[in-house]
Length: 229
Image (tube, rainbow, N blue to C red; front, side, top):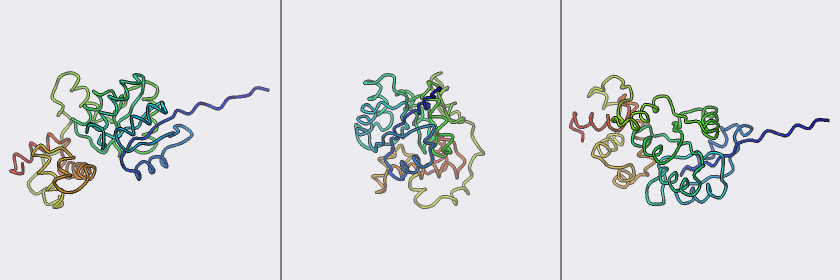
């Protein structure tokens, strides 16, 4: 009788500072294709857990508390310094060019947004675990431009927003937009408004969507033109 061994299921560690998101991702992922073996919620914990468990792939958020304040990019740098072969896939609500480029320069092999379906996340994670580089389609241009030495602002732009589009923004979104346009980081804006940096990140994504802008650079230019910076 021939005995067939069960296929080896790749393992993953999920790094995100929101336990609800980690739980939701665990529920959405197909455990028969990708098995989550650990979780972490901040930079230092992430480095420790990843080095201890040595998963096939790390699903890594970009904005994380702890460490020296470098977020996901710091996790990638510190992990790869100890374990050069570790594969990391950035998974974030942010599609800002600087976030994409920073974590890729630090060593992540892919970057997709949290709007991706569970099946897409699994497929991307498996490809990164196998050695591929994977990016959400509109984010690939940021990476190509960055490593060709071009400005990382060249994603296809939608229609230019009009002054009337401000009516679509909430009062909080306007406050966040003004601070980000002035050069505040997510953490600095959150401290100014007494909200979390993750909440700031969500507001920025909402503002970009409502104003039909591609990234924070376009937002800054638009705010400056309209006297909001």
